[in-house]
Length: 225
Image 1 (tube, helix red, strand yellow):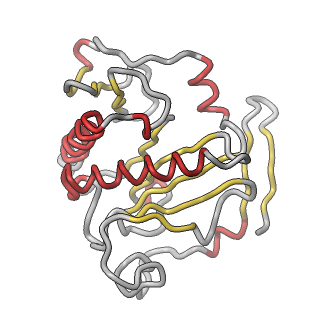
Image 2 (cartoon, helix red, strand yellow):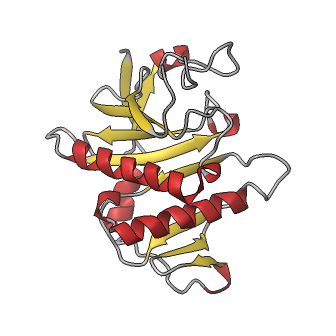
């Protein structure tokens, strides 16, 4: 693995330059590695995590979370039951990775669409486990961030355990916050009822987002733990 670590001298942000990732699969290709029969999926599956063959971190862990064996699926199309399975896998992997002495932060995210850098269109997310706390997450932790439980006209969806609202100082045309009403440190601390509510909330939110335009919306989803 050929990686160069650089630090932005103005912000202090660590940047990982990994040239070998230029060799990773890029759709469209003749075969999808995540479809049944592909290099990563010999048989049908619901949701699973695998090691990323082209990791972006030298010190840490990079995993791919496959949502479904169906190439035309999406997080929204999984429905609440399917999304709950994804949440449970997030929880399982977070808990296991946190046990490693060399892991200090677990980031769960999804980039969907070529516009935001996704090179494979098959529905999937990723998990990066860092040996340090990334600068953006450190700023959130240091700020003692709390969800806006009363966001007024920016509120989009309110459920017993979660609130969804438009971000106040957004830097994107569409930027939503989905937050638990009761603050928890990690996704594996969510109770059974909270996870069910979370899955239903994500289903409603992403189903609505896909109706905004004439084609599936490209997005970046971050789970800040």
